[in-house]
Image (cartoon, one colour):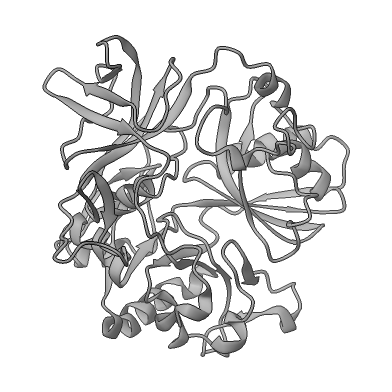
Length: 418
């Protein structure tokens, strides 16, 4: 049977703007527009980028046992003092073997109402996983695939643009730190808690994103989604907004050391990687603060591979494949390449990496781009180690690093960005 490719509500607009389209997660999505992925990437670092992310899936979990179910299935500790309504959190759903089913962000409105946003095509899978674990508990699980409109506006001008379309923006932007959200799409929630556009339309506004830069994700009833896109596109012109595709999204997230599910994390042990914050370690990192599916497999892991970020010396890259390998300084094959892209907003000067947004970048600095990404290896490495990425055509030296693109703006105080 021929695979059914879905289209978002913005499909026609993507085509009208000359987007290069491809299948991603079962959806026909824009990879880049005529201005090119490099310009889209740079726009997010310097002005703003607008992304259609309505291919992402969401699952609603409600009921008196909703908290207990997610506490058992999700890797983050929802009883942590920081987990209050209005604070969202990144983590993963694991299988019994400690492998990743999918990563997700969980949005708690209260202990009986949660929205968990997962990757394209994963809504039904995660809903089924949660349903299989709920037992006799009072929990309702709803797959909201294609029932929410979602877009991302990312970059330093994002708040300025949203001020043009939000009702009471000053009130909304008060006390809204990174990884917090306000408002609801569900009309069942109190009107007093609503975040609205100037025309009265309700939205959920979240200070999150997948670029490492300051910005927001917006959820809205699909009936109003196209209009929201057009409003932001129109008001954003003054602020240099650029529509962006998945290629820029991929290079931005890699430079920000963010994983791609089913590529950088997947059906292998979810340990020994740069994302330890997604696990509920105790202060001594000798155990976890709660029990959850897959925890025993993680704690008993002895021979698990190690995942490291890397950065190259120039923009050359090697496409991950079964033939692409990683070799140590002695030429020994030690693993494979998970992600290898080019972050066009960074470059080296005297062996130090600067971003086009770095406040201390050298005079006249123009980024030429650096390859970056993640490797998964058998050997323990440390920052500063040099490894070689190889395939049948090319060999490039890269450095293991703790971080890649400096001067990222995601965590900046909102009051600085208005």
